[in-house]
Amino acid sequence: MTGPQAGGLVFEDDFDGDTADGLDRSRWLPHYLPQWSSRAASAATWQVRDSCLHLSVPPHQGLWCPEVQDDPPLRVSGVQSGVFSGPVGSRVGQQPVDERSVVREVQEPWWGWTPHLGRLELRARMSLSPRSMAAWWFVGLEDSPERCGELCVMEVFGRSVAGASAEVGMGVHAFRDPALREDWEAPRLDLHVSDFHVYAVDWRPGSADFLVDGEVVRTTTVSPDYPVQSMLAVFDFPTWATSGDEQEAVHVPELVVDWVRGYAP
Image (cartoon, rainbow, N blue to C red; front, side, top):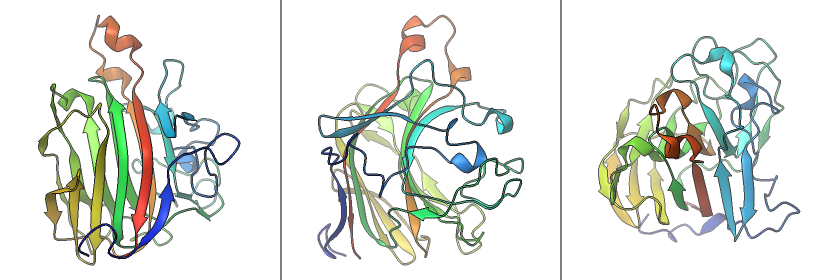
């Protein structure tokens, strides 16, 4: 692949409000891993306005799946482009937290966007405090347990943000895929994450380039070789709060997505 148009545009969502509430349910589920919790407890706080998807975690939002959280407990608003689970009580589903994760609410198989190779791009900005994080990643469907690897395109913790720079995590997480190995780093980049930037991955068999604003930041020598689903989320970790910091206590973390695009390999 020589550029974002090498294989042609095959997926695009610019959040222009073509549906009643602006979110295309044929592409996105506004919940975060509901099989381990429930759709009610995992519902995102979100709006589509100004041709952007706004994901946020307001103070009243409860903890996600407190049954399996020790350190750190989290609150999250996310959308994902696929979901499924095994029966209640099983451990079948994407991205279990740990060995205590069991299906609490059955999710019927649904796949809105499941790319396999190609260039994947996101234009987004974020507002974070030291206790929050935003990320865009792709995970295997886990329709077979070993198809569980992750391509993390962008992960930013607010505590890494220092003025005009931030650590941006990117790479491959192997999890339980025996064909993969960990190849992940969080290089510090000169950018204001509160401004819009384009985060992307050129995903090839056995390797991937990770880019920010069109520039290759790092290259991995491994990559998943199966379809994946897109995960977009902003997180708040209450136990990371700085005692007595009133500004941090009232801050609402937000991830604002202008558009998402996918190009064929």
